[in-house]
Image 1 (tube, rainbow, N blue to C red):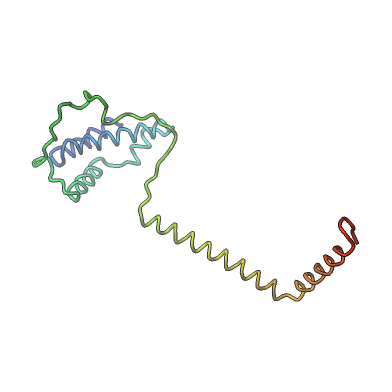
Image 2: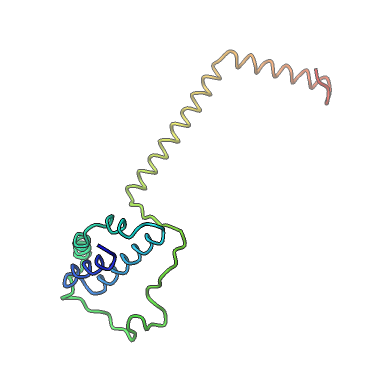
Length: 165
């Protein structure tokens, strides 16, 4: 299946189930998505295979529209406007060039998981540092070195600046 067949099947599956605006928004989204993936060097066949069956995607769109309170096209009224699509002073949907920036939406539970993981890693690092500090402070070798350094500093200070032992 190619891009146009995918979009045609998606449109056919959505017609009569959701508002024309929802259909156009989703067709635009998938058209832009497919074009973007192809411009990144992916083959059209691979993108189409990854997307899967347009009827399943349509079912998801219909279910989401119903869950959002959409009543389908029977009760849908297009807001009145003095402009029709494409004739406005500003286009409602502009085609953006691929800037190479990819924005990924992360769900709130994934963010919470990341925050918890970072906190756990920080706690592990801090506990390791404090454990090492305790081991060093308890070591008699450490205290011998500290006392030797202090004695050396006292002797070096009494000899005057710039003089070495």
